[in-house]
Length: 111
Image (cartoon, rainbow, N blue to C red):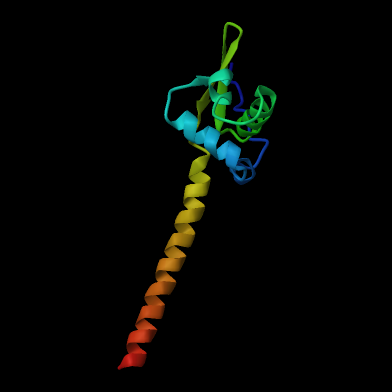
């Protein structure tokens, strides 16, 4: 039996737009996985609010979770971040190319 892979239901850019969610991703990048109560201590908000942020990250495919007893543990899935890396790389190349052109124009103007 082949299981279809669940598609992302939330845009990765939308998910990382919030500073709290970016911090959650950073925290999860430093460890293999963390339970909700260990993530919550890093924020000035309750477990419910942190849980809602984690749900958004999960919808975007950036976080996976698993139950261990009564506890839910969260883990970073960095694969969707490749979309952002590719987008930034494109504009990094764009700006580098334009800066080279500007330098060439300035050098030609000096001559």
